[in-house]
Amino acid sequence: MDRYYWMYKAPRMSKPFLNGVENFISVAEANRVNNGSRSISCPCNNCKNFLSFIDTGEIEYHLLHDGFVPNYTCWSRHGESLLDCSTSSNNLHSNENTFNNDSYLDDNDHHSNERNDNFNEMFDDMETNMGADEQEKLHRLFHEA
Image 1 (cartoon, rainbow, N blue to C red):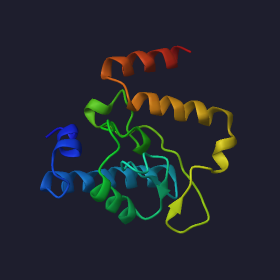
Image 2: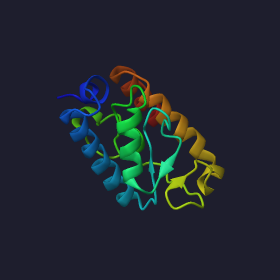
Image 3: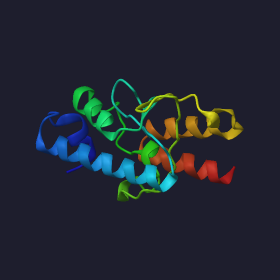
Image 4: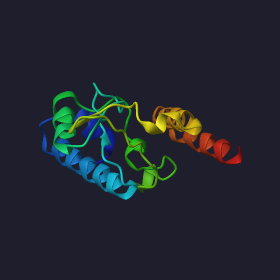
């Protein structure tokens, strides 16, 4: 079953959606560990990957309650490269966000002062909202530059 179906068409309490959320949490947690991050961006329709949480249960609750942000079938903020998205490979970095709270983290972290972070974040956001052909062209242009 493709992601678009279970993420946006299946009822939120259906088996496909619940299994999909469980799979998403596993991918995001593995990416968090791989990157040494403290938190995971929440892709729910309210947080829209701008807020991060340490507790995956909080993210799971948000996804069950609010659903996923529109058109986020390639989890680029959670370890997937857009070039490899069709093969479900997990290669891309995610942003680590820190804040003085045990479960909620804001996007204003020490990385925000790095010059390339804003560019990388804009690039990630553009990738999320494009079709596969446009993604390939963008990656090719990015690597050529």
